[in-house]
Length: 227
Ligand code: AMP
Image 1 (cartoon, rainbow, N blue to C red):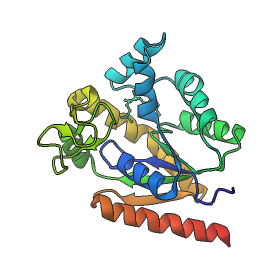
Image 2: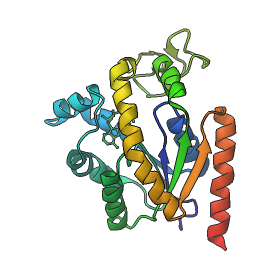
Image 3: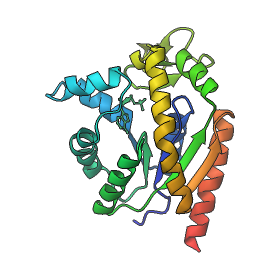
Image 4: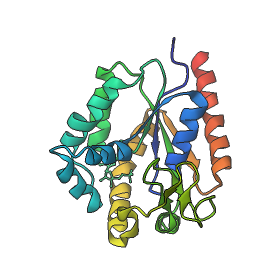
């Protein structure tokens, strides 16, 4: 079956709601969803030779080096996804070198060139959202103070105690993650703008409003591509 919906890279600072939107998109379109941070954490959990090394980068708020990320984590995973469905890439690329490597991998895997969906929010909102968020260690869903389960500290789906991610509670690690984000992603955004594949969305609005906006833009792309 031919793939109709476009492949999408979702980019935005921590707390911009990108993971929520990525999940919603994957559900709406039945796409593959690749969450890079989750792949990294799963590799740590596997307790293989590399796990300890990878964990040390994550805990310091640093990016896992490209060679480990692509050769040991990303490439093997990409081989297993259903290529007849669109792919939503969450959390990659985070810097120009990853953009180039992902581009090569996509080409090699005969995957269509993705669009970049950029969710932007100010830094002050990043701090506010991240420092208050909790996560279910089982299903990895994020919880905001307004969400059901947050106050009771229990994921309603998994009946598992919610926790704070270690790298979310450390202000200096968060500052580091955010400064890396700004420094490295602008070139990526500029590139996708230049090739006319940038979808820019204001992430300050509610989840529903952002999703509506995102779907509107993607449907327009689908229609334009049919012409
Ligand atoms: P996240 O859940 O997206 O905040 O990612 C958690 C951690 O996984 C990051 O702090 C990095 O250590 C690692 N990670 C996630 N995505 C990438 C990436 N694209 N490149 C390198 N490391 C990554």
